[in-house]
Image (cartoon, rainbow, N blue to C red):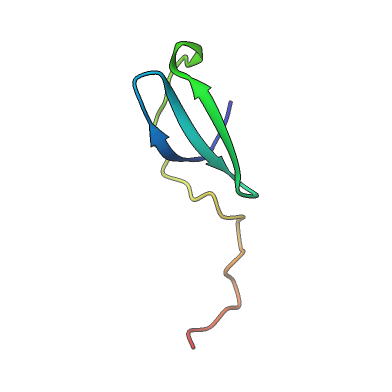
Length: 53
């Protein structure tokens, strides 16, 4: 399973950017399913303690 943001999509493949800015191309024929996830890709608590400038 991969979790990332779709940065490019064609009839043949999806390009995902993963945590760490690593881009992977996944051929559509290898996909079992693709779905939107309600969770953020940010690490839990990453923004805790930050204030607005």
